[in-house]
Length: 206
Image 1 (cartoon, helix red, strand yellow):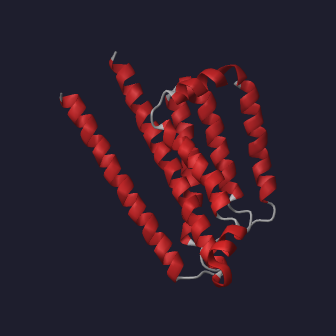
Image 2 (cartoon, one colour):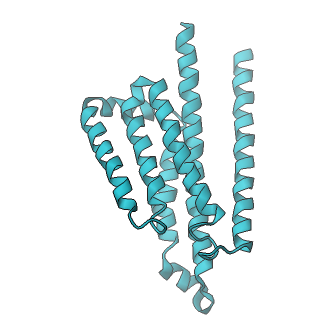
Image 3 (cartoon, helix red, strand yellow):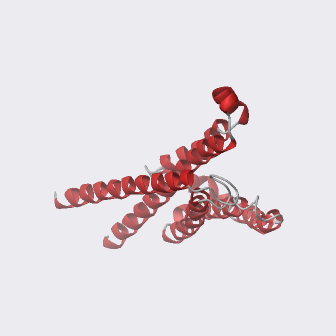
């Protein structure tokens, strides 16, 4: 009874924290709408872009720890970590001309890890799928890398706004959806980390 109550209260507390995160994201989004940068509203140095980069960097670190804490998913967690670090560097593509050469070593690392742990990847992926909060990870992927790209198409915004079309409106829509996707990734990372920490604690009790 006490354990279930403690778990429920902790879960509700996390929901409250995530709700506060959504309000914070909205505040940053509103700030960017009111304060153009040197690259325009929602440009490459806006608060929205900086948050996206911060989420990706933190996710790379989170999944390193996840792999260290739970060896059963270490092989897939390491690949996810490298993927987020690559995405982090990719976010600087409009600011750093040579960004690809920074990503290239990570691509090679990704390929080497996949080859080294090839016999563990299937079981690792299966074990990852057993974690309920992994659903947020896949939702984040769909929102960030598929829906936001489709939602941000210039043809869509030109059809919607017609003569009133402006680039900032398109950027606001696309970057806002992308930021939501990254926040879902981040929530997934935190929840998976909580899961493996709880699992590790339970294993020590046995």
